[in-house]
Length: 247
Image 1 (tube, rainbow, N blue to C red):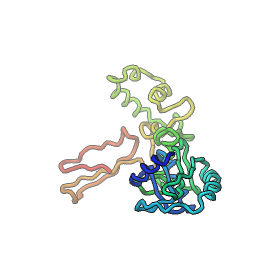
Image 2 (image 1 turned 90 degrees about the vertical axis):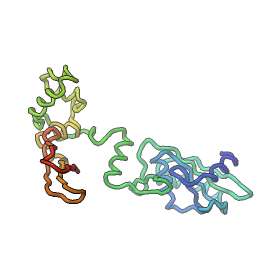
Image 3 (image 1 turned 180 degrees about the horizontal axis):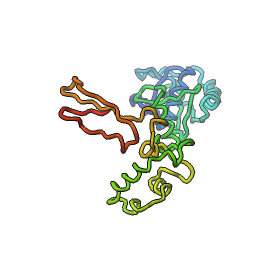
Image 4 (image 1 turned 60 degrees about the horizontal axis):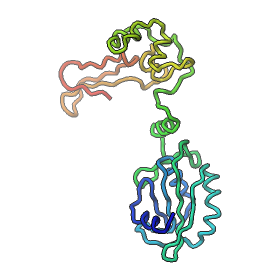
């Protein structure tokens, strides 16, 4: 990176891919981790939040210790270099996007705007699945078998789909149907197969139900119900007048 390139970077605001720090602290490994889990980013040491250039007093020491520290803690090797502006040394840590999840002390971090956040719960699940190139519904199951599929639901689906999938409508081999629908890979069924065609999907996913409510105003609920079963059996119909909400 040239001096002019760094001056241009300093003129920018902190963002998902840019952060300024006056001094190095090991806690900033979270920031580097978040850059790696996102689209990459640059951490510049020796700058105040108001963009005043203070410089780093011991740049040589950081150049010697940071590469090993980052690699040992995060398993990545960013480009680290010293650039001098107005006689003051700045350290630029250029982090590339990682195509595998990167964790720091067992936790995963992501960048949102100019803030570094720890991923938890469903956000962490979606992040890991995305990094591994899959989605929640495409994950395969070990304990779901052909016997768990509701044949009546499959037959109803074939009738509904006959205009768009005529070849599927005449198929009698259940495994072949599941394969053509990308629900079976020749060895295992995926989660989508459970939600669509299982006799009892709640056996595998307790929260796979729909909750419906009838409101006569924006806040007044007069009736509610829970529908279970596979997605074809969850009959989400309006019950009389009023507004039906599903959540």
